[in-house]
Image (cartoon, rainbow, N blue to C red; front, side):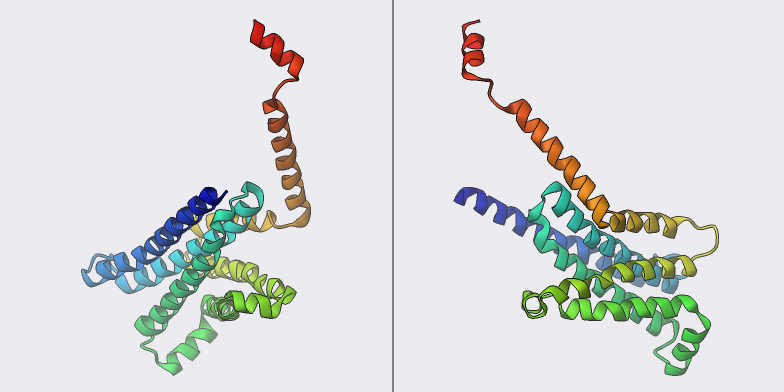
Length: 230
């Protein structure tokens, strides 16, 4: 048992280090490409889009961890959920700063005007602001302090996901299907959380596990004895 526990901890540490590396690597690549002039014709727009898309991917991964724990019993992934959530917020923050800084030079007047003229900017900013309380209360201390209210608060992440998809759709040109693909992934992850669907999948998994266990059970002593004499 102790050896199994140590092995689990070792794998978790590896996954945590791999998560840090995998999450930091994109921003390093984008930075190098930006300063080397390899981000295409419009590097400002590309850098904003890439950081935003990375934030969305990390958000979907964050939302995918709970179903993997629930249905695949991959409890080893538990520590990664908060990590991916924090990196999601980090990339969203960089995305916002690039938008405000590179596009509008942090000019309050221009930014305020953009919020009135560009609906995707309003909905994107709303999604970012909703993430702030989620990040602040993501620690174990806050989980204990808020109790059952913690889960209620963190259901805001579902609304954040929907707002981000709408933000992406409004930002892109008509006929571009990429944001819709992301939307389908989000829809699937949200459907898995609907109680009847969740219960059905858990029942199917439980019956499948029971059936496999019954198949692998040793035969009765007399049957085993007959088999051994053959």
